Length: 352
Image (cartoon, rainbow, N blue to C red; front, side, top):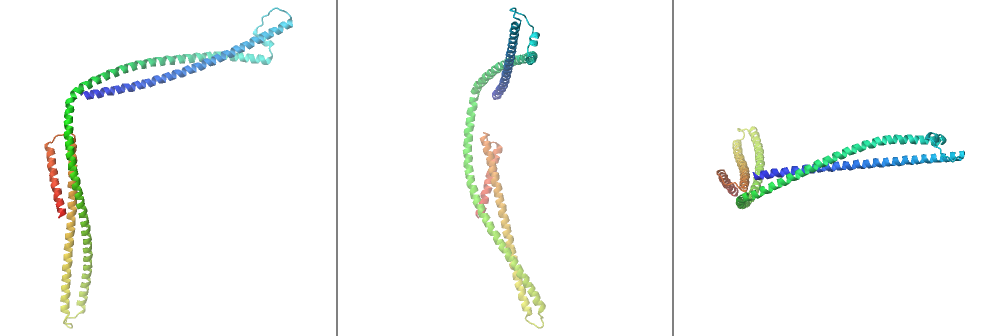
C-alpha cells in the first residue's frame, strides 16, 4: 500500500515538473515576443526621429529661403524697415523648380506626420497590450511555479515520511526475503548440479544416437545389398523358369529317357532358389522392423529427454520464485524420476 502511494506521489511530482517546464517554456516565449515588440517599437521610434529631423531640416531650409528673400527685397527697396512676408509671397518669389519641390516636400511631410502618428499610436497600443499580456502571463506562471514548488515540497515530505515508515515495516520482510533468497540459491546450485549431470547424460545419449545412426546406415546399406541380391535372384529365377519351360517344350519323353531326371533336377533347383529368396525376404523384413524399432526408440528418447528438461526448468523457476514444495511439485518430481528411469532403460537397450 505504501509503495503504491509512493509511486502515486512520484507520478504527481513528475507531472508537476512537466507542467512547470511547459509553463517556463511559455514564459520564455512570451518574453521573446516582448523583446521583439520592444525592438519593433525602437525601430519605429528611430524612424519617427529621422522624420522629425528631416522635417526640421526642411523648416530650416525654408527659413533660410525666407531670410534670403528678405535680404534681397531690402537691398532692392533700400529701406531699413523690416517687412513681414507670408509663405505664399515667398513661394511666389522662389524659382518654379524650388517652389514645386518645397510644395511637394511640405505635402509629403504632412502625410508622413499623419500616417506615422497613426502607425506609431497603433504599434504603441499593440506593443503595450502585448507587454501587459506578457506581464500578466509571467505573473500567472510565477504563481503556478510557486504552487508547483510548494506541492513538490509537500510530496517530497510525504515520500520521506513513507520511506521512514516503510523502512521499519520492511525489516522483517527483508529478513524473510534473504532467507528465501538463500534457499533459492541453494536450489539453484542443486539445479545446476542436476543440469550438469543431465548434460553428461545428453552427451552420452548423443554418442549412443550417433552410434545408432551409424548402425542404421550400415543396416540400410546391408538392406540395399540384400534387395539387389533378391532382384538378381529373381532375375535368375525367371531365366531358370523360362529355360525349364523351353526344355520341357522341346524334350519328348518317349524319345529321351533322361528328360524326366532333368526336369526333376530343375524343379529341385527352383525350389532351392525359392527358399533362398524367401529367407532373404524374411531377413529384409527383420532388418526393416529392427530399423523401425530403433527409430521409435530414438524418437521416444528425445521426447522423454525434452519433457524432462522442460519439467526441470519449470521446477527451477518455481524454486527461484520462492514457492514451497506442494503436492503438485512432488508429483512432478516423481514423474521426472520415472522419466529418468525410462531414459536409462533406453540407454541400456542402445548399449546392448
